Amino acid sequence: METFIDLRSDTVTQPTPEMLQAIISAQVGDDCSREDPTVNRLEAMAASRLGKEAGLLVPSGTMGNLVSVLAHTHRGDEVIMESECHIYYYEVGSISAVAGVIPRLVKGNHGVLDPDDLKKAIRGEDIHYPTPTLIAVENTHNRGGGTVTSVEQSRAICDVAKDRGLSTHLDGARIFNAAVALGVDARELAQPFDSVMFCLSKGLSAPVGSVVVGSREFIERARKYRKMLGGGMRQAGIIAAAGIVALETMVDRLEEDHINARYLGEGLAEISGIQVELETVQTNMVYFDVGELGFDSVSFLKELEMRKVRASLRPPTGVRMVTHRHISRENISYVLEVVEEIAKSRSVC
Ligand code: TLP
Image 1 (cartoon, rainbow, N blue to C red):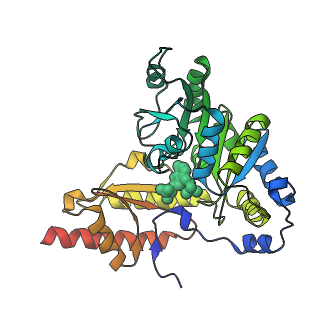
Image 2: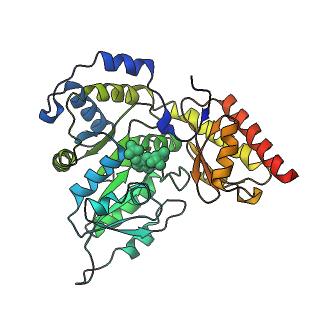
Image 3: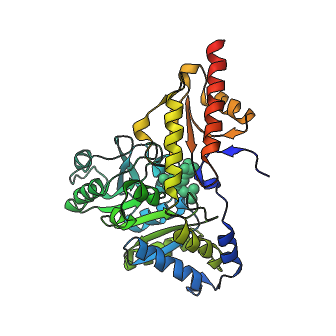
């Protein structure tokens, strides 16, 4: 049995009993022939939930972003994105290696893009330049600290893109966290974007899967790329069944994860030697720095591990903790005790 308090990611969440039941009783068919009724239902439900015409189930967020970039661009195009975004940082360079596009990086404020900076980054036509065709935004922004881009900011960013004839894609892996934090319908956050990818398998606790939504025509192109990448699945209804339960039952409870993250962040900020940027603790993530205590990320994680707590690295001296369904307030209290103990052991020697 799990004895660790696992704060590495919300991706570690286990399916709920209701999801397992839905998997057992799912009606399935060959999804490559669009004959899986459960996949069809999830795709329609996801599209309607985000106010788009159509949806596409993909095995992962990484594939969802990649098929979206493929469907928006041509080889040699330029894609403008935030400098620390997941697509650039953690997707194995797939947009360059597979889609053949070049990223142009724009620094945001803890991941949140400023429309004026985007305006400056969109270059006019010149024989020497790649053609900019897409702006990709991340909400919530992972490396920014789980930070949220508001509806107004999203609209302003997409207005810049539209004015210059560029398409827009939202890496909304955690769009429901953003919506819950802002107290808005996820549809409003999705509305200005041409396409949105969101994950079922993070805070929403489904075991597998992400969904891309957009116009019918866009999703048809993305569907073809999904097949090209080997993401065409057969009786994928067993995945979709859990995804439907995730969408139906797991969104509202994300608030609890945010409250726990806030409790964690505020507690950590009181521990001498720990640096936390509390203004970035807006959803279910807490990043903090242990450099002042003389730790690097790896050695700090070892100390945590010895005390049955897991977190993830942000080298050289950063640590990330992510709250989720399996993390209670009591767990956070324990984690705070543990971090205080580790910090004290350092300041004594
Ligand atoms: N993020 C994972 C790791 O890859 C870092 C995590 O633990 O946070 N977009 C965003 C904003 C993400 O945070 C992630 C996963 C993805 C896309 C990719 O999703 P998957 O893991 O399903 O490919």
